[in-house]
Image (cartoon, rainbow, N blue to C red; front, side, top):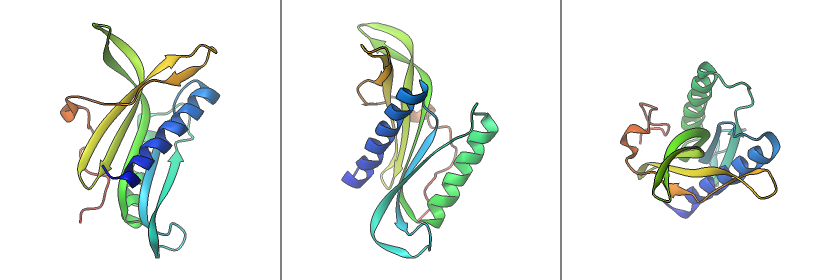
Amino acid sequence: MKHDEQSLIKEALAQAQTELSRFGRVRPGAFMLVRNNPQTGAPLTHPTGLGTVLEETPITGEALETFIAGVRTEAARLDALAVALSAEAEAELERNGKVEKKRVLLIRMEDQEGVHILHAPIDPQLDGGLGLGELMASEGTEGLDELGEPLLPRR
């Protein structure tokens, strides 16, 4: 994963922390590194990062499918180099030798190298709020990527 693609992950983490602080949960978001100007469609001199969050609450399966379809369409229109999807999920994490179900931020990063699945636990903080734990690569990602087809345009 290149530096520019890593900046998408940093943006997804920052957005998720803001969501946790404001709402106590993380709404699905999409972050793209694009080569075309979003307003004009003209090629950009340098790739640019863009992001959006699904505003609809509660989030239905249909709304999420529509959101992902829109991300796929915009990725093609804007000639995206990388796309990071982020959302809150429940996962089984091993901590201190025990497996427990935890709320996590799940990030699906797709770039020219393939798909990378990352997660960060959502933990209570000393101030009573919620925060993100350490971001880690998810092991055994074969079953985690349920999109069925890539988000990025085929080259």
